[in-house]
Length: 326
Image (cartoon, rainbow, N blue to C red):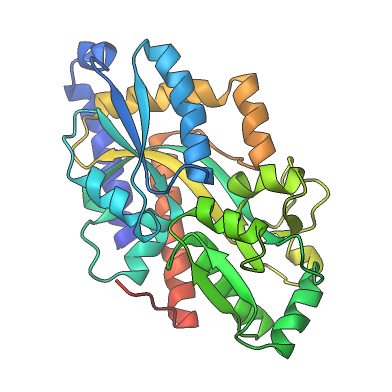
């Protein structure tokens, strides 16, 4: 029922385009546009938002600002954007945390994904990378499982926050490996990676977008990626499935969304323009480097994708009995 109502709502919004004067979308934006990111600078969400914002600023001949509002694994930013004027001046870099995980993990969530947001366009889907600090000796999945078995509850895995994509990937790992490990939540990928590089924590299922520069520079060690097939940007790092975890797939995804009453004419214009941006060769090169694939497409595609992700992670939360402090 949740999926059906969300998709129907998206379809109705698209149909409403017929009632919006075309000049309205053509004239927009008439002022600065903010893309709100639910994490501090230095993380994957921030990196992709800045790639898109830079191109849109040129295309629109208007200022496009990336504004960081970190906290509660991206939920605070979503709460904020849900209350902003639906005039296209404030957009959210929607994220798996705020739009697929939080609905199951936080029963007192102050927004409803279906009611309070208009899905605009999927920007990209990335694997997470299981990465290790530079001082770790266990740098295969098999060896990490063995280490967790020897030291139950003591091997540390950082995440961007309780209820984040990194946290849920860890919970999936614990369930499949039948081991215990220590979850260390941070307020975003930036501080997490700083501590991982400094060996204050041992491992993380970090977003490929955020982890890539540090893997390439040798500051952290890439152990495994978490889509069923290897990302084009990381052809040498094996998947979890290749290392014995059949069907293990825990992605992080990003997309633009607006407040719930965003006019369809504006949403359609942003969708068209972001699709143009994503097709640019230099942007494609950046996305491939970060492991971000499968972005673009229609608003309806993004709405259906969000609904499927809500359903998938609700099952994981239930089966794993995962709870976080609201």
